[in-house]
Image 1: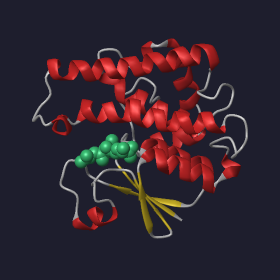
Image 2 (image 1 turned 60 degrees about the horizontal axis):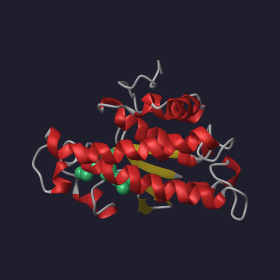
Image 3 (image 1 turned 135 degrees about the vertical axis):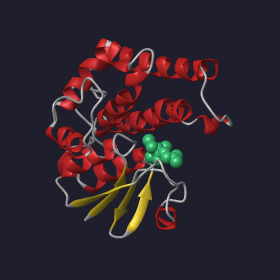
Length: 213
Ligand SMILES: N[C@@H](CCC(=O)N[C@@H](CS)C(=O)NCC(=O)O)C(=O)O
């Protein structure tokens, strides 16, 4: 039994969808990010972020690590190429690269306090925007040559990670869906029943690809 501490649309979304792919029993706990985290939650996750995934009562965090953990625990769900199989190294590489090249900068986009600022302004956000757009550009070039998924013809958890980050870009000046190769990948991902279940349960709205859940 898994317990996923999540917040709608947050870094927990890819993990939530991946859990649905596994078919594993799970329960959800909605963490309100608009108020300070409780001491109980901080004991599970000292950073106070989501996601946190409880596995047999032990708390684990970091969305990329959780996706790798789920892939390892549920090989039958095909969330990743098996160890030693073609594409395995590439999957590890993408999982880490997405977390650092998109996940890190998105923290700066949404949380000015991470950069020592109280609020956002266009000037301070400009370099973050350039970093994110450059990241999406590099991925789109890769997909143009090797898509439609990050691992070519094979879907993997990294595509959930990418789709989640794409969703976060929806209110940016250049949303990720403006890159045709990224839009194509996202449309394949959002058609998966597991993604649709997670989106429906989190009652997500506001992205053109959220659809009528
Ligand atoms: N690197 C972490 C980032 C987690 C993260 O920053 N989550 C955000 C929501 S998307 C959060 O919990 N924000 C609340 C806060 O920082 O207080 C991961 O991928 O799990």
